[in-house]
Length: 463
Image: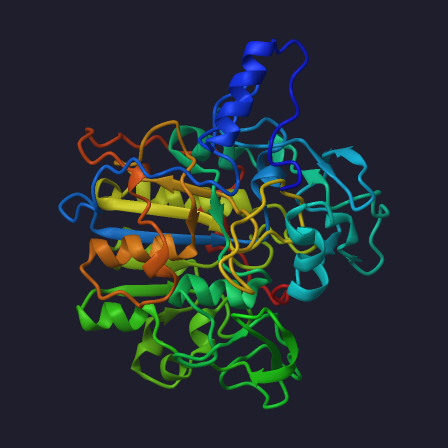
């Protein structure tokens, strides 16, 4: 379990130490002198639900997907009250290291593939191999990469809007990305609850693809392929697939109930445009629900055209992707939330803000593993709604399928029967009996007008 149980704070007396041992053995919570109680990493809390999603209160779901951060990395500067955020970690040599401040715009990326990064970092549950992940500096980048760059946190001055959101509404410190790898499979899980190459297949996409000539998926080069993994055994390698899969998605479930939806993307293809890698979507009528550019959401909100379900994908500069972002990601997310909060839709909307994968950054909580490729590491989740619990930290185990299940229950959709079937429905994050919270805009460096007037970006996704 690595460092799942905090080191005792000096001054804890024997009675508290005994309580600590009993609670861990239960296992119900971890107690730390001067800290808050929270569940252990492999023992998720039982939900304290407020009831299934209330369709009389919530009529719009917005899923804002950011890139490549962990709770320890994004909130390690100051923490979230009551949340399990750790400011130190362990390396593969057993050395304890303090997390260091590393700018959101640091000029390098960290490997977050499955076989070369996730497996090493996880280290059979010890969570001490993050230093074995390789780093990739930008060409001609200065300054040089610091020692142990994987063990870093974002300075609060650079992601303050996220702190505001997490502290004002609900923050989940047990949201795990479903897959044990990078962006392409992660975005598939957020659309479908699976990234199987076809319905019922045991072979899943494990990695990001090798794009031969462009970053298109279903209508890209036949030489563009991706490595597959056997879901049950976890054996990867030897099998390749075109970047074009075909399995049921939430689009299909929404179609069956005539529920409106829009997928706001910023490019046609690439790792973050999940519908582009689904054959029956890309070459069918549902492709009309994929809208480019992503800033169209601002016009749809102001014009009263917001769909019942929306996915919102960032541009590369406005993502939080290491080595690619220009640092505007927190402003981008705040601009989307503020647009909803200041509109007619606020009282009937829930906004899920989450990150698609860990991006190579350190996190101390070991995930529960269901098979050879699920679950992956923790990612932040912020639930923003007039009916989200205020200042609440959810210690319940969630995964990407939890958002799908919430949406299915809210709109009375048939289950996809994938990870949505085993996941919880985020009920503990809501209180539908409370008076709807009055929206207060989040302060950020840039607003929606800034993003609406930016020139098109040609920076590649997840380079």
